[in-house]
Length: 356
Ligand SMILES: Nc1ncnc2c1ncn2[C@@H]1O[C@H](COP(=O)(O)OP(=O)(O)OP(=O)(O)O)[C@@H](O)[C@H]1O
Ligand SMILES: [Mg+2]
Image (cartoon, rainbow, N blue to C red; front, side, top):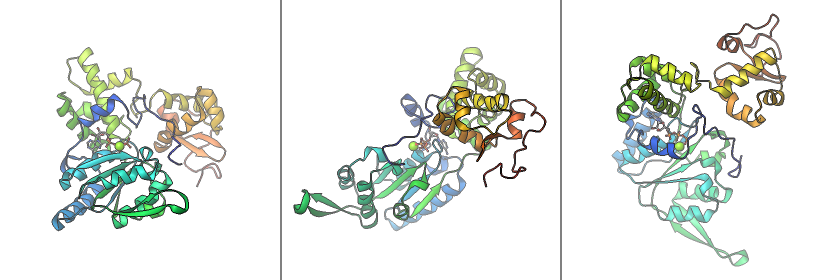
């Protein structure tokens, strides 16, 4: 994928992992400000803590950091924490915003010493900008090209030392020379339910909402391992508790609210359930081709493949096989249906049915 192409977005879904518009302001208010406040990701937290402490002790600038992980897991939040922990200002931009090398040169040449440059969606930067970045990261220098054709000259420009923090949801798409120039890569994992409960309790305090332990657990279980979704569900459950209850988010209020908003106890929404239901009820659990499945649920192929399926696969409810999509026993159980006799058993039992 290059910077021009965009995957289908899942914004507008209550359980969508991406965010835009007004929600970004709501999110900013809930961002942890330092590493101690940042919940979960014990490995990345410990590694970053060492990297930053060492840099501070040396009185220098921290090495470049690459943060990779699915949307909503805290990459932007961590980049701001890195700046805060280093006592440095932060400049925020993104791959798609930098189309020409000149755009990048302008940003780089205006950085202050020690400043953190946060480059979101770094895998979507244009090729010429990427090449300029290599030299900037390694030698703190860029060559600014003046003029065109045979008369063009490269004017070297010294840069102050800075820390590049790159974020990507697709680390595999980064060219190796770029990946190699980061001193440290933090891989963000999906959060465990108990970690999400802590995120929810923390956000509830900031939003001034009372949430019981049961209420937090109920929301956490439906949040798909993602703090962004946990915070969003918390806001909707708070609305429900305020209008239909006494404002307190109990286990029961949370379960009822999320039933109203059609997010089931495993975090599946209407789209996910309709894909699963079609697979089970119309096609006996598969295998069925993606296009047929998409027509059956009245969605675009890409929507089914890129918006609904990844989570269903991650949850072990659906498998992609060379012969088509297949439901797992867990899918039948989740929808409370009994597989017809002779249904292929998932879990690799049938040879050739599942991808290696
Ligand atoms: N570890 C955490 N502890 C508490 N809150 C968190 C944590 N991680 C993320 N959040 C909250 O989740 C929301 C989304 O986080 P953030 O914007 O950092 O995700 P992201 O990885 O940058 O997502 P994207 O890939 O869409 O840019 C923010 O409101 C943030 O406060
Ligand atoms: Mg982000």
